[in-house]
Image 1 (cartoon, helix red, strand yellow):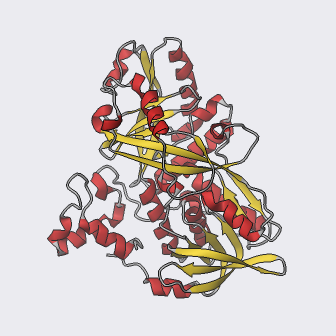
Image 2 (cartoon, rainbow, N blue to C red):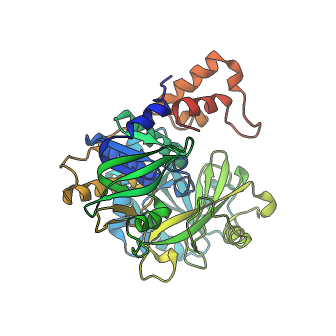
Image 3 (tube, one colour):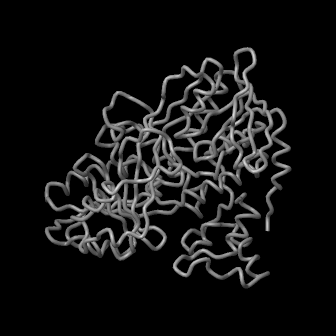
Length: 458
C-alpha cells in the first residue's frame, strides 16, 4: 500500500521558497495545485480544514454543461463545460460515469420545446456526446418507474455525467503530491507577507501543533471559495466584496422514490430554478435550493422552508408522494457566485472570475466542479501573463488523475480505482477490517485505516 509522506516532513517542507502557493483546498485550489505541479512549478497548497470541506463536497454530484444556461443564451459557457466534462471522464473514469436523465412532460407542446433544447445541448458536446437525446411518449415511465403517470404525455431522455465530489477532491490532492507538490490540510493562512508593496508569501499555522511558518512564493493564489473576500481583505482592508453567496440545500430519500437508474429533472420551478432527483449511491438525492446567504460558513444549515420547497417542487413528478418522514438526511453548502447586477443569486453566472490585487494577490472565484480544470489553467496562465511565473505549457487536459482506472460501478471500492488494491490488502492482512462501520452503510473499517495512512485523514 502506498504511504503518504508523514505530516512532519510535509510541514518542514513548507519552510522554503515556492513558485506557487495555493491557499484553499477545494475543487479550484486543488485543480490549481495539480496544474502548477505538472507544469514544473515548485508548488504548495494549504487547506484550513478537510479538503473540499465546504462547497466542494456539497454539490449535486453532477459533471454537466448546465442545461439551464441554454435558455439564457450562454452557449459559450455550456460548450466549455461540456468540453471539460469529456476531459474529466477521461481523466477519472473511476469517479465519473454517464447518467441518464428524463425530463417529464405533462403538456404536449413541451415535448418539442424541451426536445429541441436538449438536442442542441447534445450537439454542443460534439464527439464527446454521452448518448443520443430521445423524445419519447408515455413509455418514458419505463425509464423511471417512480415517475407520476397521471397526465404524462412523454419525456425527453438525455445524458450527462455524475461523480463523487469528495473522492475526486482527495484524488486531486494525491495527484498534486504525486507530481511533487507539498499539500497539507489543517494548515490555516493567518497572514499575508508584504514586501515592497507586493504579496510575497504567507504565514500559516498548523491547527494540530499551533506551530507557524512563513512561506515565500512568486505567485500567491487565493482559492478559498466562499471565504475569498476574507483573504482579499487580509491583503487590502479596503477591498470591495467580490462574491454573492447562495445557499443550496439537498435532501436524500430512499431509492424507491424513483426506481430504476435514471434521474429526472424538473426544468423550471415557480422561481425559475432547475430541480434534480438523482440516483446516488443506493439513495435518491433531490436538490437544490437557491437562497442568498449573509456570510460564509462551513456548515450553513438549512431552513424547514427549504425542505418544504424541495418536497413541493418534486411532488407533482413522483407517483408516490414523499414527506418529511421519508427524508434520510439533509445537506447544504454555499456557492461563491461572482457579484453582478442581477437581483437574485439564481441569476448570477457560474462563470469564473480572476482578479489581481494592487499587491499581486491572485483570487479565483465562481465556476463549478465541472470547470475546475479550466479555472486552474486560466489562473496560472493569468499569473504567467502578469510575469509572476515563467512560461510553461498546461498539460492537465490529458492528465490522468490519481487512481484512474476503468472501474466505477463496483460498489464503493470501485471509486478507489487502482488504489482499490490498497484497501483490499488491509482486509487480507486483517479480516476484521472488512466489517462495516454501520450496518446501514457500505463503508468498512479498512477504508478508515486507508484514509488515515494514505489520504491525509486527521
